Image (cartoon, rainbow, N blue to C red):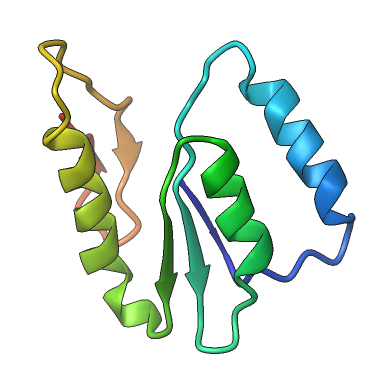
Amino acid sequence: MFLSDGEDTFSIPSSIYKQIALLNKEVNASIFTFSLGKDASDTVLKEIACQNNGIWFKSEDPQNIITQITQYSLYYSLRNTSIPIWTAPYEDMNGAGEVFFFF
């Protein structure tokens, strides 16, 4: 999952795509991207999701990001798989303590 305002001030998009492809070659992870903010640029984030079997979301109001992350979780929970997937525990940014996701 990748969240951004979509503004890359450090590189050109083609180099980003190549770097992600190189890093993702062995793990073949689906990358979900979120454009945050009303004026967020979408082009690069859409392409990253598209090239990596992910889904792009736009959140004009960052307050709605929890709902959209829930949709992301539902996507994985509804996949046709018999193998459970657990995330590594991490510290919740809203103070809920250590949490994890089960898909």
